Image 1 (cartoon, one colour):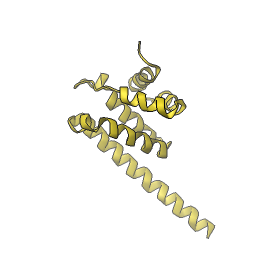
Image 2: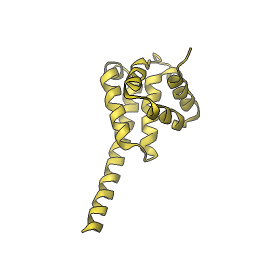
Image 3: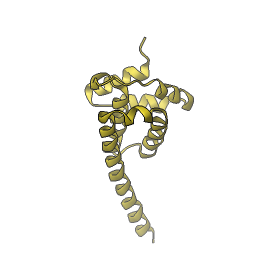
Image 4: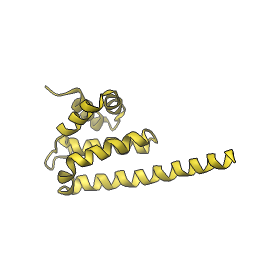
Length: 123
């Protein structure tokens, strides 16, 4: 029986909209979220069934949407700690991680500019 976590991740991958998956992930207690992240599997070359790839894409989509910056970083930290060995062996996953890193840098720059602007307004 497929878990709700995996089902919502696959549904998001099929539609390109990961909002329901992210909402589900946010609702999980930290211990459960950790267990679910541990259960993600690689599709062994099949991008359609690669849960690791879909997870990276889900987090990237949040950065593109300019939402959940801190949570995205926290989840990626746990994800990388758990699955780094599989990621470095896969060109597809490495490319997806590069895209995530690029989007993260863009969002970081945007937030830094907003903080600078707010600091200027306060002064």
